[in-house]
Amino acid sequence: MEQELLVKMTDANQFSLISHTYEPKIQLFTLDCISPLHFPSILKIPTTVLHPNPAVCPIRAQRDALDAVGGHINKAVVPAAAVLKVFDAIHGLEKSSDPQSDLSGYLKVLDNLQEALQFLSDNCGMAIEWLDDIVEYLQDNNVADKRYTISLKKALDYLKELQNEEKGRLDGGLLEAALDRLEGEFRRLLTENSIPLPMSSSPLKDEQACISPSPLPVPVIKKLQEIIGGLIANNRLEKCKSVYVDVRSSIVRASLRALNLDYLEISVSEFNNVQNIEGYIANWSKHLEFAVKHLFEAEYKLCNDVFEKLGLYVWRGCFANIAAQAGMLAFLQFGKTVTESKKDPIKLLKLLDIFASLNRLRLDFNRLFGGAACAGIQNLTRDLIKRVIEGASEIF
Image (cartoon, rainbow, N blue to C red; front, top):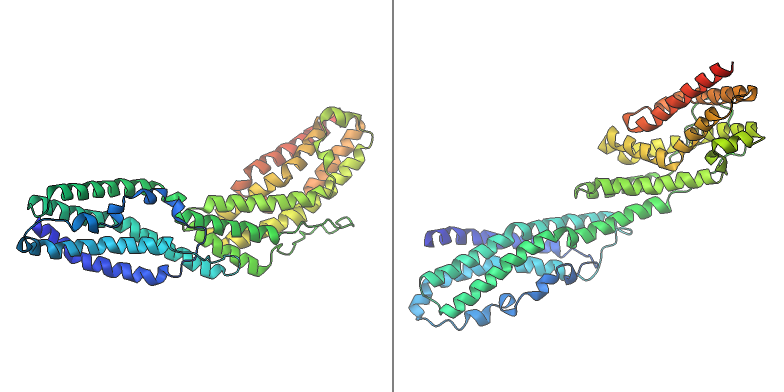
């Protein structure tokens, strides 16, 4: 037992040195959202654990017996005190770094916080183990009064239970609060810099793909990329993508709402009784072309710009979700409704108009919706074209 302690106590000095290297970094932490409430069980620690002097001082033993273990006790207390020092430094923060005003500084604070929490996670158990070994040494050698060593043993057992309990709460504590704030800044940047794109008053005449400018400023895109890097490092990519799709799809929907697209939801029975069907189909062709060449073209480019470092699969997946949630499926469903309407000579012209519109956008469809992520849109488009051709053949 004594040889094991000697080995551990040699490492104790290095442990203390490591804790001091974290202290300057921790001084930089400024997360006002952090408080002891994130770790409520800490408040329940008996005062004999936080302040062990009353439990240690009354030891009754001869001085020569204590001299042999005095150095061991000191070396065991040093790493435990180092852990408490790091913990107190984290929870003693009062002011907050603001990701909105200083994003780079906030990301550095986040890195330091991760390192400090990792330090605690890696070393709390080790410090408790050292203290536990010393208590066992006191018991085995009858150096201390039995009731005091029992009291210390109970306190250490409580610390072990508390450590296991707080490990399970780590994701809901310090780091989680900091990441939530960073995620909020990601949403704010997207929301405040995203503006619905108005439709031009004149119909589109050019059949070439109309490449819209990026709907977000370059500095904003760079900030989004920085935030994504910080969130990915903490396994929050899916949440990040969800926020992005939610905000951007709402912007596209806002642009489309201005076009008065209520006719897209018309049922087959209602469609058969409408007199001005030609007007609906003419609007459908114009609105679909605007959505594809302007709105979805812009979103396609923006997804690439924001998530380009993560690969094709990620950014195309985001774009596919935006297109599906923003209204692309409603355009295709309207075309399907036309094919299901009653057969008459006028319907042939309607079907030919739909086919002509889809044919004009064929290259755009293949480029924007050609990836595996857009399989749903591809299937609906193919089904619509098939229905149009079969419907026209039946009438003809």
